[in-house]
Image 1 (tube, rainbow, N blue to C red):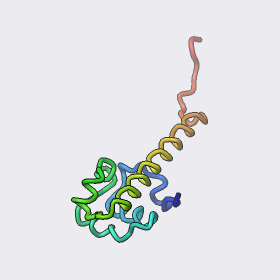
Image 2 (cartoon, rainbow, N blue to C red; image 1 turned 90 degrees about the horizontal axis):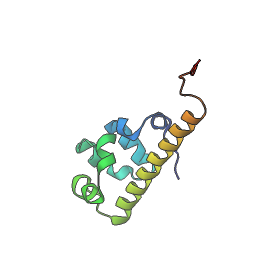
Image 3 (cartoon, one colour; image 1 turned 45 degrees about the vertical axis):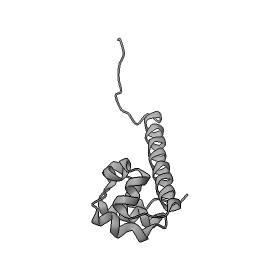
Image 4 (cartoon, rainbow, N blue to C red; image 1 turned 60 degrees about the horizontal axis):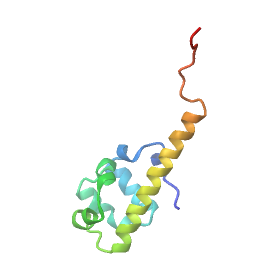
Length: 102
């Protein structure tokens, strides 16, 4: 799978701006749809909830293979972010410290 642009690797999908969505589309070779996504104000939060039907109707992604690719890559990005968050929690990055029961 394609690497996320560095500016996106640090953000959850729901935090992406419309510009971030355009950058992500470019990273998965779907930049042809970036202007339609921007015109429809599709940010990361909106993108996260879009169905294949909405990709077609709202953003003009007519080819079924392109809609499937966008959905598949989005699912992959979200899964990777969740894995990353779990790994950080498991490595003791959660703080909390302390003394238990005395």
